[in-house]
Amino acid sequence: MAPHEPPAGQRDPNRPQGDPWNAFGYLVSGVLLYGLIGWGLDRWLGTSFLVAIGIIAGAALGTYQTYKRFQIPDDDPQDGGKQ
Image (tube, rainbow, N blue to C red; front, side, top):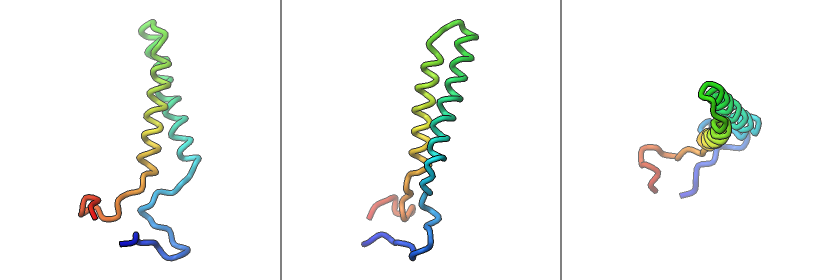
């Protein structure tokens, strides 16, 4: 069966909107937040590697959050995605 397409001019409210600034914001905020946490832990513990781990973790979590935000949902949640 063909997927249901909304009429021309109408947007599907269940389909995520593709705003690139929103994706950019998730990535940058993840890097900044977790990099700042890593920097604070470096200062507190006297280490020098946690800021790098925080930046990498922030980039990974920002990428994951962007993926989950822009993922297209299943059409019928009752059948578990089976056709």
